[in-house]
Length: 320
Image (cartoon, rainbow, N blue to C red):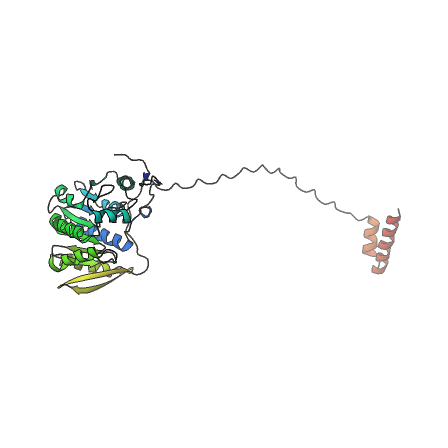
């Protein structure tokens, strides 16, 4: 599928093609980029099988990043309402407030700026995902859809059914004050739903319904070598949870490369200068020769006599 290098929002505004991941709108912060890279990279090193899933894509920033870890034969499923009706008043109001410029065309144009093929796109409610994704087939799921408790609880239940036993789920907005329904659903899953938290950042909780011990120990070993990330371990709901936050600027892993790299400015043409004509070498200064009489006066006569002779000769020359 080929799209033009630009997309349009619902107002019809032309959006420039992204030349790097930072050009894509979204809230995918550096510390979470490091953790996505670590979890997905570790799964590749251990050759853990499974597909990828994202619920809530916005303009595609985190999907573009995660798509770089898709292996041959795997499927990446992305679900979002995009321009579809939300089918309930509360969800529709949230869509109008938070995502008024969201369109499927913008997401697809952004994604294809970095990857050759689109993911499997499910346009509609996240309740459609279990019908499109096989149970226990997913190794990494990113849940960043609705902020309403009922929908988030449903997304978490879906993730539990779809994840492989070793799978990791990243849950966004688990503590944000503007969406308490997400926090209620996430911590309920930890307290009573069998979700084992591995770590938290300022915006996301990462957990598993499998054994969190090996992955947590490997994560702590990784964090011990990072001078740009602070971490600490907390006891939560009978288990341990690693807290992570940045210490100054965070070094992010390599981003997918856009096919719309900015063009380097052409070097400015230097105007040709007219050739400078060669100058003839200066003529040698004329050598003034003294007359034999003057040389005799200077060399033989006493100084006071020779000086008087020179003055007399000069005065006579000027009168001539």
